[in-house]
Image 1 (cartoon, rainbow, N blue to C red):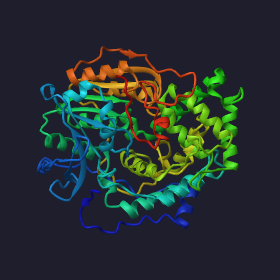
Image 2: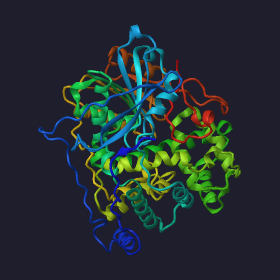
Image 3: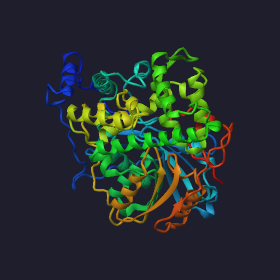
Image 4: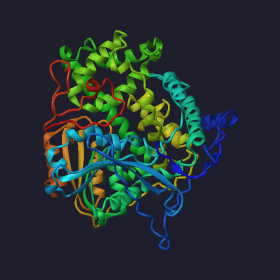
Length: 552
């Protein structure tokens, strides 16, 4: 495993135990006015007199399957470009047809927290031939993730306790408990990764990409980024607009709200996720035969199921237990697959109703999940500017739980895991944020940028893609009319548009819409249908491993 190179020092402890935690909870209930005394320090790197960072040297070696791997040393802190370094793990596969080669295609997964190395290795064979022929396909683990000095906060045992104690239907004391647990999470981050925390924000990730571009001998960047990878690409374009050849941003973020108005950004995610869940339950009501869940009232049955599982958790095969929170957590990720998985979700809900622990919705988060979830929280706490007010936090958490009643309460009051559960940690975040990027996002002077949004996306709401396309000076919006997260690999229409853009720089006409979503099959499929990843049936359960479907 790669590490960042410096002499370790024991990080400063954030004393948030005992009386201090009590003070935080009192602040939340109105007897105090300020949650934290610590202030975030944002420092922009590199003055005009600062020498540029050295371009890393990539020494490639075979790493099986035709892939080559290398390590890249980049500055840990770009304010000190000649100082300490962090080592990034990178991978590539050379263009299949050297005569057609146009350069290098950077592939960036979602997250934050997913491995770019694994993203390339897992998805290369499903990429359209035109991309494999035209480009060396390249990926890397961003700083703090995977093989690139992975962040650690809670250890596996502590994370397991957190998700086991969480509820699908939290009680009246849930907010105070959530604040205390988030404070413990933050302390664990300081204890285990304190010297790395300030440097994992997206501005520094974008600077890393520009050094990697140079190390690969590319004059400009060709890039496909999905979900959080779209935000990384957006920041790169904003910082280095003249170095953009082609950026395809799929499942796009509203970058301004993400970074500077995080409560607004979070609320849109809550509503999008609950909207998707509600539409799925409406489909169950309309097609009871195919869905198989709900006995005529799927909405009511779902609410009862959460409560029943909280009251009587289901023992799991490995000696753990699954409750209402487990159900909500799995639905949050698995519903991303779109309509094609709806019959599978119905069957899994019915199994859960029967207390059958073979349901993939009753598999608690595992250590494979924690490797993703820890960095997911940390990076967003560095990137986002939450006000240090627990009163404001409580107002927003309460409103989101109320207005997204299907999945929202478990997310709002759960432990720090995925996007919806970050605010309690981020409001109390103890570390500096020197690597945070706060705008602007115009990318003036860039080549045309392709933004893709899916109208029923439960993870990155469609309106975010619309907002990004308007914030960028030179962007084209491609719309995929569908349920599910992102479009490339799920839609032949969208995939063809992305390929034409990346290979030949053909920008889709304004207003282009794709409407070729794979519809729900009449029965639960046993293998992945064309045009979908259907990760739960192919891989057992979604541990947030990013996969692209094969629509060839």
